[in-house]
Length: 471
Image (cartoon, rainbow, N blue to C red; front, side, top):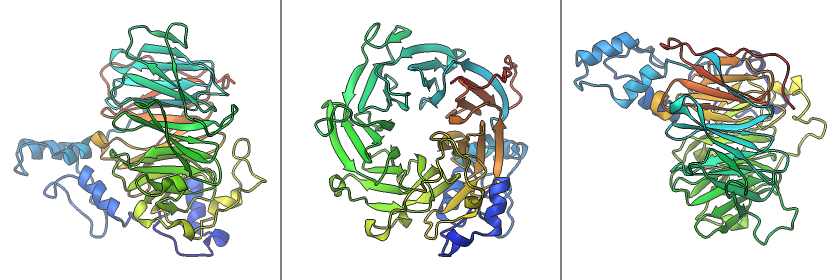
């Protein structure tokens, strides 16, 4: 893990530590992250000082679950119960590493998959016009089986409304469709058994061919959608007015990912193939394409961004085979950067990342941490913060094009766990918001479940058939 790197020659010279991290899977900092987020993470997931023991200059060592329980029962801290931080300290040690167990398999690439905010539903989207919503609390029974319409190539993204009544799905088209998932019918065939209303993000700004949408997200209040597209723009759609409300000429290349920074909806984070992450304040000049700030550090395009939800920190996955942690207080103005042109000789969709490039660093890297070990090839691999309730967001996790999933410690940068199972890229993954349960979805068409060891009931273990992915 690394702080702001000041060596302007690093992009040419690299260093031995970077090469070691590239081989072993680690961060670019030999110690713990010296930043505000260290304290914030400790406040969310650290035990009470009376129960912990520290090493000078280092993060406090974990306190055993037994000691935590004895302290609670003996009212050692005077509170008589666990605080949220105490609970996170205990729960965060129970990682979902056992498995995998079969959830579903479809003869189509799995592109997107996410738990709902309350963990009761799980949404998976596949390339061949198929979306399934599972009821997690009822043995993963299919609650909604959706056959999408008017797709171009694949379902690129889905998003569930905050009240869990509606689902939107996007494709390489300016038309996003919305489905009522609260209806009684299980089968939802577009405009045959149910209406899939069309939301035209193009408005009057584009011709019939339009553009493609890579990412779409609901706002916290459920009134708006924000989308990233291959016309280099960010689009905001007003669901109440049923029309686009904002078009931001955001980047110099495809915008692969976008999300709201926090609950207010004022700030938007975006990532693009121009290698830049940008911060947009909707209250200031966004219609003119003027970002609130720019964050440099990736050497290749950004595939995904996940916000910590506090309007300050976010992580990004990059085609330079790294995940980076950002603090928007380090961002620079628009005038402070020059876009870096894409290397025409390398294409992440079907080529391995050049060995010599793994040791390179951006000469003006503004990220506060860099995590290496996973592979970001073939498709737009996604990464996330771990759940706040059970872990205090002390981990980050990411899919990988080698069929694996990686979990890193946010502060130390250590790779704390990895899953190696799928026969094709793991494009998306999701950690249950409350339980030690992880789902991986892969291009081999498999949705697999991972849990913490020691459950009372041993589910039927699924073993891969090694016949290769379904294309």
